[in-house]
Amino acid sequence: MSNTLVVGTQWGDEGKGKVVDLLTADADLVVRFQGGNNAGHTLVVGGKQFIFHLIPSGILYEDKKCLIGNGVVVDPEVLLRELENLRKSGVVVTPERLSLSEKAHLIMPYHRALDLAREAAKGTRKIGTTGRGIGPCYEDKAARVGIRAVDLLEPDTLEEKISVNLEEKNFYLTRRLGADPLELGPMLEDYLSMAERLGPFITDVSMELYDAGRAGKRILFEGAQGTHLDLDHGTYPYVTSSNPVAGAACAGAGVGPGQIHHVLGIVKAYTTRVGGGPFATELTDEIGDRIQEKGREFGSTTGRRRRCGWLDLVVVRDSVRLNGLGSLAVTKLDVLTGLETLKLCVGYDVKGDRIAYRPTSLKKMEAAMPVYEEMPGWDREIAGARKMDDLPSEARRYLERIEEVTDVPVSIVSVGPGREETIVASNPFH
Ligand code: IMP
Image (cartoon, rainbow, N blue to C red):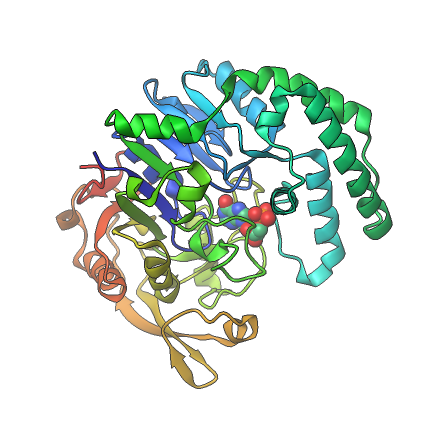
């Protein structure tokens, strides 16, 4: 038995969805442990397109159990919409296939309203959030006024909590942010009706995982976002409001550290970021445009154009330390095909000081100049490569240099969007 945890090593959008889909074949259960519907990935299976924001894509395999852990913030409307879309595509999801933790916090309409109104008020210093209410929901969780999935099972508790919260939020929305107030009646009606539909899925996820582990089943922990968007370890305040680092899987799913046997870090072969915040290797020239176009770098949640740049190994090396990575999956290597010269950032120069880690001070981070190594690129298309030896020597050298600088082996390489367009040098589950 070997449970695997998948985390993003950059600023999200590393291509975790495809790797998770690939590894799901070897797992019995797939669990999400943080974030919410700020995440998103698209899968094409049997000619049909599926977009997932909350439900693990493992739901497309008939024999896998999918779980949404307590650390996830759940917008019930989005969850029901995803269930409905699956039903329309012929995938009927029963409580035997999907569990929602009773301890997961719910995103409420006032969380979305606060997210949008606050961002609008910030002007040029806005974070560039996804506007899904993620931050305000986690705030309520920490302030101990949040509404949890378990409350959906007790209509009187739900009603009382929504009324108390809404009074305070409306005051803040109207008086401080100049936004419109929200109405209690329709909100109560919506949540009571959604409670009926979601009720059967609400369980103790931690207990399910414990029992599954004891029965020798294999668990895949699916991280969302990326290490440098982590609330504690990321480019604060340009971060999300949860902890995407590996350690958070324990608190967010309700398991002990001994239940995680391998941490796989997903590294996109270049770097991207959506929203604001420092990005040392950002390319604002035609090479950046070319990577953006070839890599189809648009956010799958908001459709925003992603900022693109060279691979920043300072960022990845920090992620090795912060997550205890056992191996790396390098994705979208094919996007770099055709570039004459590639650059790898191996350090930063901050006003004359050479450093090998990402500084915490935002001012220093904004001043950090990348120290690059240059490597020759390759011309030959690589989508057909199925083993390392099929790659051009320059591509192999690029991967070797990643291994040398991070001191972590590359176990998987993705050379195209299709499930089969992958080199699996070693499977973390085996
Ligand atoms: P929030 O998570 O909506 O509060 O957004 C905070 C920051 O995290 C913004 O810069 C978002 O663009 C970014 N972000 C949130 N989720 C993702 C994701 O799944 N991929 C990439 N960036 C994300």
